[in-house]
Image 1 (cartoon, rainbow, N blue to C red):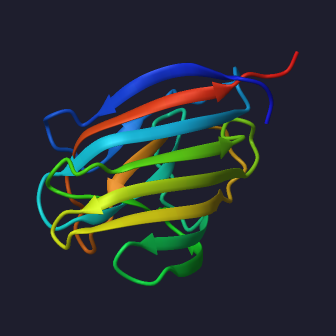
Image 2 (image 1 turned 90 degrees about the horizontal axis):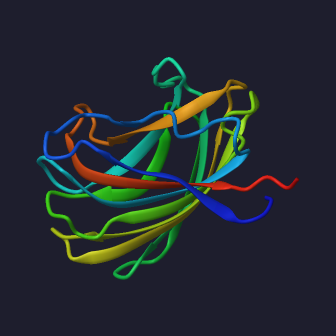
Image 3 (image 1 turned 120 degrees about the horizontal axis):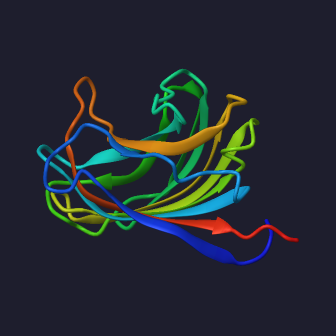
Length: 182
């Protein structure tokens, strides 16, 4: 990864009107090869805390929900032993920090490698959240790959809740580009 970070923009998704997907499009471009995403805030419109998921979005606004994501995750909790999970050919990047009905301090930082360059996209993520109903602190360190050689311009966030989607409120995403070397 080259050089310094430059702010691409700060974006909010969902506001006070609940949506099933918080779409952040036109955040990746030919201006940068690699990016840093920082998510803060966010809560669900209802229900117990659930994991946040992410899918890639193309320039036409289509969400890639195909079985093209691989996940490797280390879970760290203050009330239990750590654990690991791995999965291949999934329909999303799984187990980003969880969101709950209160603004309980969920956040993550993710490096995104080559989302716009028509090749596989790789991710490295660290996240933290407070599970307000069970009163524990949870952290995750993860790597992911999106195995589609396409040019993607954004991401869509949703809350994992099988079988129904859960509304997202008040999400903020700060996007930085790694300055290219000249």
